[in-house]
Amino acid sequence: MTFNKWTIGSVHLANPLVLAPMAGVTDPAFRQLVKGFGCALVYTEMISDKGLIFANAKTRELLKGPQSERPRAVQLFGSSAESLAEAAQIVEETGEADIIDINFGCPTPKIVKNGSGAALLRDPSQPAKILQKVKDSVSLPVTAKIRLGWDEDRSEEIALRLADAGAAAIAVHGRTREQFYSGRADWEPIARICAKVDVPVIGNGDVRTPQDAKRMLSETGCQGVMVGRAFLGNPWLAREILTYLESGEELPPSAIDERIAFARRHLQLVVEQRGERQGIREMRKHLGWYFRGLPSGARMRERINKLETLAEVENLLSEYQKNFV
Ligand SMILES: Cc1cc2nc3c(=O)[nH]c(=O)nc-3n(C[C@H](O)[C@H](O)[C@H](O)COP(=O)(O)O)c2cc1C
Image (tube, rainbow, N blue to C red):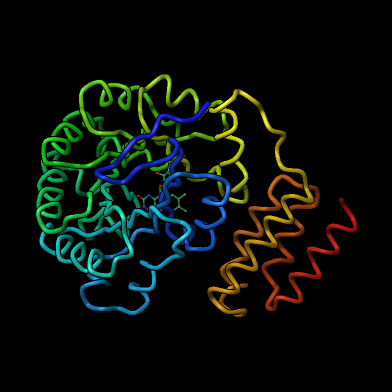
């Protein structure tokens, strides 16, 4: 069986699986890994509109990635329609994006206090106004990623307005801003939105297993299923989900030596892209996730946080393999 193709604007997607944008996580190396296991669409980390406009070199760096990971959605955050539209034009000119996504969901105080992210959900008409302006400024498809609302569920109204304004797709995380990441994501509003809007909806929140992904698709009627935290230290989950959705086959979870092989591949990509010193620093948190739930995982995390060179990391991984595999 093959997947039903779906599209966001003119972008064709081979299957429903989408890698969620995660700041500090979904850099090119991580995206490449998850893409390598079949994920149809990847998002960059959220990128500041102001950073792009003021030509901040570090911010511009966030736009880039390998050709092999495309189609790539570039996610922008900001508080005003004008500057988001200007940033979107910059993104379009670089040719680095297939889709431009706007962040209407980030709950962190640093972002919402500037009126960005989930702060834009306080007034349910605001996301649509912003999206309209951005859409009128570029020819790439423009999508929105929302939460259910600020402190109560207003998602249906927000999504209907976004669809009217010409959103090419809407990703919905089934929590309010006030919930942050607590409790369980509510998928019911996602189902309601799917029944009401005629643009693709991407369901998000607490998809951790292949069975969850299947339920998200069947219970809500969404076209895309977006996975974030469950991929941390486990890019292999993409293959497990896609195999299960396609054939119902449950692949065994990755064994310890496979996990270490993924960590090694990840390490190699990060060091290639960032250099040894910076790469190892960035890899520490990922390595911690790879060892989550494994024997002596906590002890490994402590040791990993002190490592500085590639040789030290390689030695520690080999030592672990000798002891536990
Ligand atoms: C470390 C981390 C960083 C995140 N950064 C972003 C971001 O940059 N943009 C965004 O829209 N959502 C961001 N999110 C939210 C995720 O995209 C996703 O909506 C959320 O984690 C729920 O999905 P999950 O249950 O599959 O993790 C982030 C989440 C985490 C855990």
